[in-house]
Image 1 (cartoon, rainbow, N blue to C red):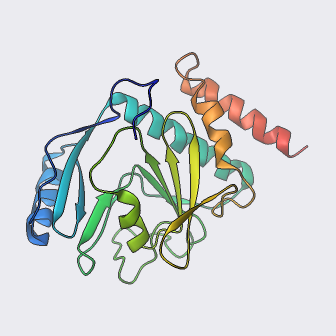
Image 2: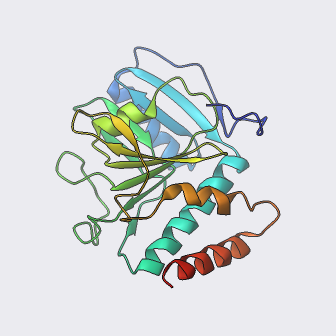
Length: 216
């Protein structure tokens, strides 16, 4: 999705979508890029592969939202386990991708101390945050649905959508978060939009003060 107010894409495609790519080729490329320390995202969906390079605008938004999520968890005293831009993949589904940010919330205790995660036996993250400013050829939401991620927050620069996984394997809009019961993720945009006039620390302070006000 392209937002008119933001002329440059949040992520730049590095190449057209490649078709007929084997799982072994995808896994090897992902491993080699990780070993090289290259910040390239790969979305893989049953033989189709797309490479993307995040820009500073993309990462600014993702980091701001991550800080707000973590401040929300601290304010509510909700245990979380953050896994950042981890690659989530399943060979049996022939699908994989990197989250922008992701969290275990309801399953935080179950994942305590775990660093090696196998989605065939371990639960997926309870919440994934995706920055959605530019058009991508491969629909990430269908992959997250296949991986059974229960909640997505998609931010496009003008609003934050909260999506809940349905029994039929599709996502539907929701007003309140399930990961953080009763919280309306749409409020996050108001604080993210304080940038660039405000520094991150000022945005976080304003968000914390707003959360304290909700408790009064």
